[in-house]
Length: 151
Image 1 (tube, helix red, strand yellow):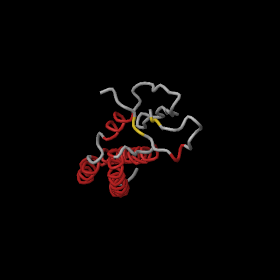
Image 2 (cartoon, helix red, strand yellow):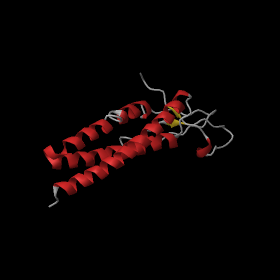
Image 3 (cartoon, helix red, strand yellow):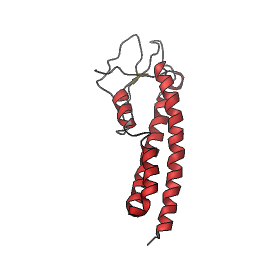
Image 4 (cartoon, one colour):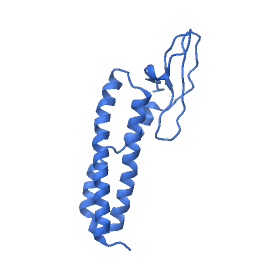
């Protein structure tokens, strides 16, 4: 059985990691927002944001475990956790709402379209890529755009 000091030490380490991930997530979101405004979001940009968001979610979950374990002794850690977790609360739902597939996109003979489906609930799909009908364009050299939503 661990002592309260050991649990607090692990909680502080988790809190420090969550703080770093939250800071990096905030930086990525600023860049992501600018790219969204210019409709220049790439699949890599979305993946980076989703990855950091998942890291933050997992660290937040681990932090909640430490808080529950500490009980009354973990009040200060709980306040710090709540402040950090508020930065990304509900963000995954918003990203999923913006980038999740709504309906299949038909392909046309004048443009090549690439559609991916989500692999997890926090990832996004239904991306389209414009290309020439004369041949494929390398996926890493194209810009991906968000599919039009139904609303």
